[in-house]
Length: 121
Image 1 (tube, rainbow, N blue to C red):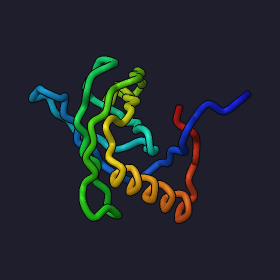
Image 2: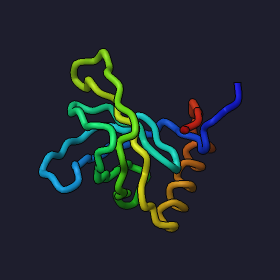
Image 3: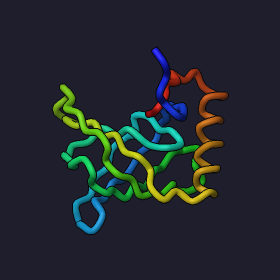
Protein backbone atom coordinates (compact mmCIF):
# COMPACT_ATOMS: atom_id res chain seq x y z
CA UNK A 1 0.00 0.00 0.00
CA UNK A 2 1.36 3.43 -0.93
CA UNK A 3 2.01 5.81 1.98
CA UNK A 4 -0.10 9.00 1.73
CA UNK A 5 1.18 10.83 4.79
CA UNK A 6 3.24 13.95 4.10
CA UNK A 7 5.21 14.43 7.30
CA UNK A 8 6.22 12.28 10.27
CA UNK A 9 4.30 12.62 13.49
CA UNK A 10 5.83 11.85 16.84
CA UNK A 11 4.54 11.27 20.34
CA UNK A 12 5.64 14.09 22.64
CA UNK A 13 5.21 14.89 26.29
CA UNK A 14 3.33 18.16 25.93
CA UNK A 15 0.17 19.87 27.09
CA UNK A 16 -2.15 21.94 24.97
CA UNK A 17 -4.76 24.59 25.64
CA UNK A 18 -7.61 24.78 23.13
CA UNK A 19 -9.92 27.73 22.59
CA UNK A 20 -12.70 27.76 20.03
CA UNK A 21 -12.04 30.83 17.91
CA UNK A 22 -14.48 33.68 18.60
CA UNK A 23 -15.89 31.92 21.68
CA UNK A 24 -15.20 31.63 25.38
CA UNK A 25 -15.21 27.84 25.27
CA UNK A 26 -11.74 26.63 26.27
CA UNK A 27 -10.16 23.44 27.53
CA UNK A 28 -6.91 21.64 28.06
CA UNK A 29 -5.44 18.26 27.27
CA UNK A 30 -2.23 16.37 26.57
CA UNK A 31 -0.91 16.01 23.04
CA UNK A 32 -1.18 12.51 21.60
CA UNK A 33 1.12 13.25 18.67
CA UNK A 34 2.27 16.14 16.50
CA UNK A 35 3.70 16.71 13.02
CA UNK A 36 4.72 19.71 10.95
CA UNK A 37 1.19 19.89 9.54
CA UNK A 38 -1.08 18.95 12.42
CA UNK A 39 -1.75 17.53 15.85
CA UNK A 40 -3.86 14.83 17.51
CA UNK A 41 -5.44 15.59 20.88
CA UNK A 42 -7.76 13.67 23.21
CA UNK A 43 -10.60 15.96 24.31
CA UNK A 44 -13.38 16.14 26.87
CA UNK A 45 -15.29 18.45 24.53
CA UNK A 46 -16.83 17.71 21.15
CA UNK A 47 -15.71 20.14 18.43
CA UNK A 48 -17.39 19.89 15.02
CA UNK A 49 -15.30 19.15 11.95
CA UNK A 50 -14.36 22.50 10.43
CA UNK A 51 -14.16 24.31 13.80
CA UNK A 52 -11.28 26.77 14.12
CA UNK A 53 -9.30 26.23 17.31
CA UNK A 54 -6.57 28.41 18.80
CA UNK A 55 -3.89 26.13 20.26
CA UNK A 56 -1.12 26.79 22.74
CA UNK A 57 1.29 23.86 23.09
CA UNK A 58 3.58 23.69 26.13
CA UNK A 59 6.37 21.19 26.82
CA UNK A 60 9.34 21.02 29.18
CA UNK A 61 11.81 21.19 26.31
CA UNK A 62 10.16 24.24 24.72
CA UNK A 63 11.45 27.62 25.87
CA UNK A 64 8.04 29.19 25.30
CA UNK A 65 4.57 27.98 24.28
CA UNK A 66 3.95 27.28 20.61
CA UNK A 67 0.79 29.07 19.42
CA UNK A 68 -1.08 28.27 16.22
CA UNK A 69 -4.54 28.37 14.67
CA UNK A 70 -5.84 24.95 13.59
CA UNK A 71 -8.93 23.46 11.95
CA UNK A 72 -10.62 20.25 13.14
CA UNK A 73 -10.44 17.75 10.27
CA UNK A 74 -11.32 14.57 12.15
CA UNK A 75 -13.10 13.61 15.35
CA UNK A 76 -13.38 10.08 16.69
CA UNK A 77 -15.13 8.62 19.71
CA UNK A 78 -12.86 6.92 22.24
CA UNK A 79 -13.74 4.31 24.82
CA UNK A 80 -12.23 6.28 27.69
CA UNK A 81 -14.82 8.35 29.54
CA UNK A 82 -12.41 11.06 30.79
CA UNK A 83 -11.51 12.12 27.22
CA UNK A 84 -14.29 10.67 25.04
CA UNK A 85 -13.16 12.36 21.81
CA UNK A 86 -9.97 12.35 19.75
CA UNK A 87 -9.42 15.43 17.59
CA UNK A 88 -7.33 15.54 14.44
CA UNK A 89 -6.38 19.13 13.62
CA UNK A 90 -4.46 20.66 10.73
CA UNK A 91 -2.39 23.78 11.34
CA UNK A 92 -3.41 26.94 9.48
CA UNK A 93 -1.35 30.03 8.66
CA UNK A 94 1.83 28.73 10.24
CA UNK A 95 4.57 31.36 9.65
CA UNK A 96 7.90 30.12 8.29
CA UNK A 97 9.73 30.71 11.59
CA UNK A 98 7.21 28.61 13.54
CA UNK A 99 7.19 25.89 10.84
CA UNK A 100 11.01 25.73 10.96
CA UNK A 101 10.90 25.59 14.76
CA UNK A 102 8.36 22.75 14.66
CA UNK A 103 10.45 20.90 12.06
CA UNK A 104 13.54 21.07 14.30
CA UNK A 105 11.52 20.12 17.40
CA UNK A 106 10.15 17.01 15.67
CA UNK A 107 13.56 16.12 14.27
CA UNK A 108 15.07 16.37 17.79
CA UNK A 109 12.26 14.20 19.18
CA UNK A 110 13.00 11.52 16.58
CA UNK A 111 16.77 11.63 17.08
CA UNK A 112 16.73 11.70 20.91
CA UNK A 113 13.94 9.27 21.61
CA UNK A 114 12.65 5.89 20.68
CA UNK A 115 9.73 7.30 18.78
CA UNK A 116 6.87 5.34 17.30
CA UNK A 117 7.00 7.33 14.08
CA UNK A 118 4.01 7.27 11.79
CA UNK A 119 2.90 9.59 9.02
CA UNK A 120 0.24 12.28 9.03
CA UNK A 121 -1.99 12.66 5.97
